[in-house]
Length: 203
Image (tube, one colour):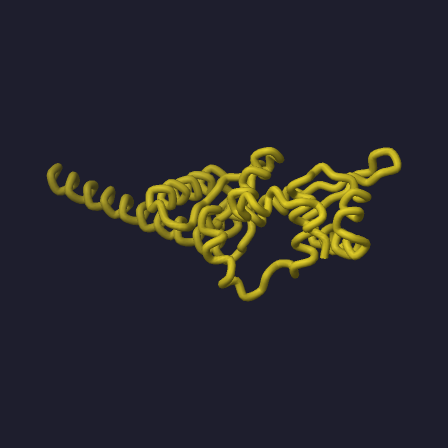
């Protein structure tokens, strides 16, 4: 009788373990799908919503396991943890210049992109300086970049100082720390462009 009870208990335990394993696999798949479809950083609350749970601990554990799996694969994609408990699935910076030409719909046309690049490299930089270097058409570029939340302006005396936003760093998979970001931009766009002369950036 006791032996039979032990066998039943063992089967129940195995069944429970299998269900827990299946749920963990499903959680990983859901988080991966959410990060892929979103195309932007997701916070813990959004991941909880996807997993249909109130447990932030469960969501954090799942995404960290997924991060480790991606790191072990050592392929082109990675999952990064950003500040404020946000996570993003993105292409590694090393691969960006190799596949950029395959992007069908660039985020920005050439003119605004040059203005954004100049601001990113030189930030914090006065709006007047940007206009002097890029020309008066840059007013429109700056307005567009602000509307897209890629650039922010802060008044300093009678000047407006421009710098990139957290969204800019998240979108392009860059560090939030300015000096590190500039190094990453040099790696992506190449030393020649990062050291561009002001007289060559107009147009």
